[in-house]
Length: 373
Image (tube, rainbow, N blue to C red):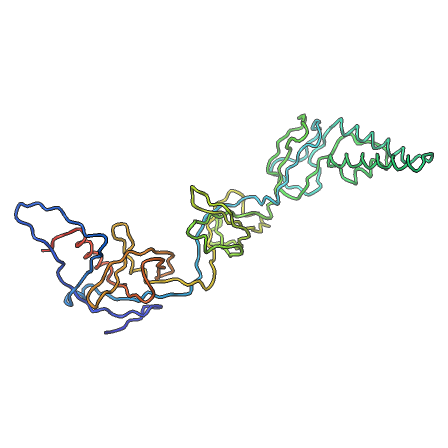
């Protein structure tokens, strides 16, 4: 028997055989229903030598191989929640002047608007009065301590309105109250939403702006239930966006979701991506290849050994030199010309590679009870 090399598998050339498939004859005018084969007893395909030269059957042994699995996933770009700031009104009042609008890039500390507030005016008056009292020279120690406590309280209440220490120092130095309260950007970023107009009256706690720092974004990937075991925190991934063909964005999973989505049967895998140039925009769809654990072993056969038969994945296992038994298998990931077998075969079992389609045809004839001429 000749042995062929079908890298990385060792393939023994099977003896080519062909022969008539068992059949039933019909009487003239008789109608007989096809009798399906017993699903519990696989039908062996036995061939005779004179037809195998036509079939070109070659076999390969199922082999365990160390592989690095690549898991496919889809997802979308999202805002990095750690890089988002909501700016809201700290006190009731009216927007007097508006300096920033949706889409503007702003810097931390930049004045976005000026706000008129009676509370702000009253607190400044209290600050100046307590400051003046704390400077009096006729106070005893207890009175001076109380005055300083009131002064610190007035300063802190102004800080709660987001008034900076520099503004406080200016009020105390000049002895003059500010007419309008400045509202500043808390972070560097882009104004994603501007929810107000000049002249609007706002109650305390109302959102004014939403600012996002887009120099860092998240990729939210959806990993299927069957792939969860191969994905873990720290797994490397390469992401692709339709807007940038041929470009790969590298990243690493830093967090896996703890809940399986019952509808999609997926969990979320989150990747923090640097985005200094701003190319990745929240809402973009991405495809990802996630690198699985190294050194993981799996059972493989040539991809051509697997056939679809009546909605099942079938391989033909060599039972004897001239006999091949169909067996249902569960397949996994394809790697080039190889395909993973997750269930149905054992290491070392020999299956038909080349010529498996011919055996599939013979199997269907027997299964469906077709007659041969």
